[in-house]
Length: 460
Figure 1: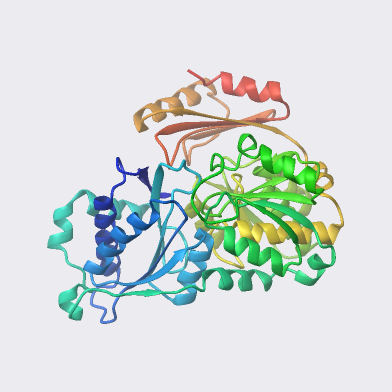
Figure 2 (figure 1 turned 180 degrees about the vertical axis):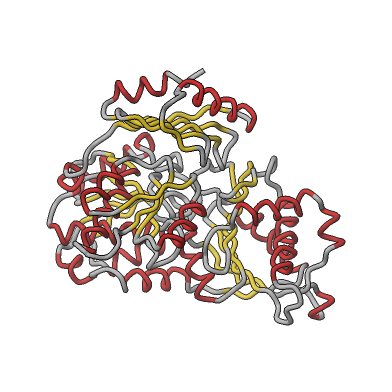
């Protein structure tokens, strides 16, 4: 699948080394089209998560870039937000992350970043897809940076500064001394993904007593890679056993974070953004300036709206996808944003979801309020959110959306991404997945029965 979220596929089936090679060539053409006539060589930074298929895909993709005369900086195994920060730090033309994020181990993919670290737009991804689907275009439209122009193919240089640079950047925006005073015991599950190294480094700088499980970047996932309650039972038990202040769980490319409270209870990914929003709005305090803006996607909990009302902010909603949220944040000057899947975007760091800045903000919130996680959660109005996914082609997903529109005719609807239906008792979002051949159906309401009733009205 090629969408605004990047490219995803099953290794050896829908994602092969040959396809990765073509994607590298296509990216070279795309970047050269943007810099037609430029004399300097194009540069792209490439990194990957820890999946065993990563070296194969990265090597093939890099070969495609090199054949187009692009200079490649190899960042090695690094988290997606770390790579995005390095793209800006290095001043390269683009970045690429070899990752399938939360998808199962048999998947891999590529995520493309612009020179500002933002994910590629829908338009850019559409152009990339057209080049990949038409191999002849890669031969008949050589980029301005092609070997004939520079006298040879591109070269590869290695750069190992991603982890340290990311940690240093975060420490500029939180009170590390305050956090360190409390010597919080934290249990972290990094699922043997790309976040292992930077997370340990950051939490060490924050004076945390760290219990790190699945903390080696082997790519051998110890459980399902999506940080859901079903996959994090062991983490909850470890929090209780070690009497920790909080349990944290990353996904394989470390752009998402889920939370376990001090009682070992999974409180979910939705609370990651909610607590980060609560912290940032609380930091800003009362102001006579325009209301601070929070940006989140259509599938994110109403908790964000409640917090915005509490602190005098306003909420802007976008289609699902980090690129959509980041674009709206830049357009509105948002103070914080993200997605309810555990993805926090702090514009002070960069326009990408970042589990590391989420960790730092949560710990700073605990230290400043001197409250427990469960106490902070209790202060936010609670809802019940149910998530379902069903196998579906794009055409079938469109049929689900149309059925929902008919079923709720007359209700308030947002059609930016599938359809979101808002009613006083709750809301429902029906949309095609950006990463898998699925239709996703999400309902949130004041109680379980109301949420289930919303789901029943659209299930086939």
